[in-house]
Image 1 (cartoon, helix red, strand yellow):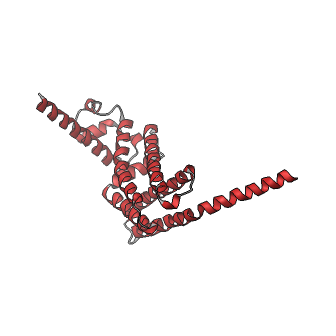
Image 2: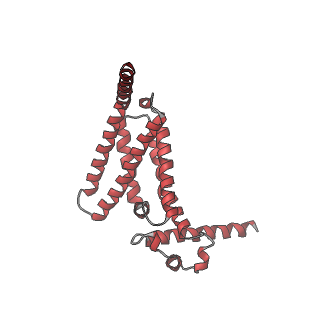
Image 3: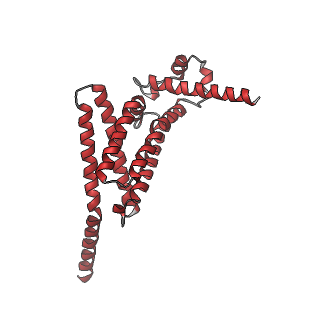
Length: 228
């Protein structure tokens, strides 16, 4: 009995993954809001009613694709940020990880780039939620670094969001560069991404001084106002 149950569960998981893979392939040329479940089941070779054994609707399938697309990237980038090497080494490795992820999962990246502001609300929210968790994880890694000593939590979170935004933008740009096929296009995207992240890193080192100067200036103005 348990063996039969295991076989059925394995087959169910196989069909579920086949539906995800089929949808992802079809989404290379269209948006999720225009994709019908009959198109997906036709590719897999199952009846349309079988779709509902795995997903409530196409929105739920899209959410599962979001988790596939972004889940593994979280782990890789978080591990790099947790290392105690110099900022430039971390930046170079992070950009390399993003580039590798785009090369290995171009359809996932295209899907996220298109649906981030697409017409399916559940998928938009799922992408926003994944990126929000990504920012939380990056913020936790940044907070543990000595250079963040004395930083306010909301400032660390703002810095994390800047990094995440740059990584997402870089992934989309790399995808376009790979599709374009122009010689050196991807390398140019990588160079720009590294420079942008280094600029953020330089600003990070001076942020406390900037914040302290503003607070002192505000204090002086308040004191002057009180004396008038």
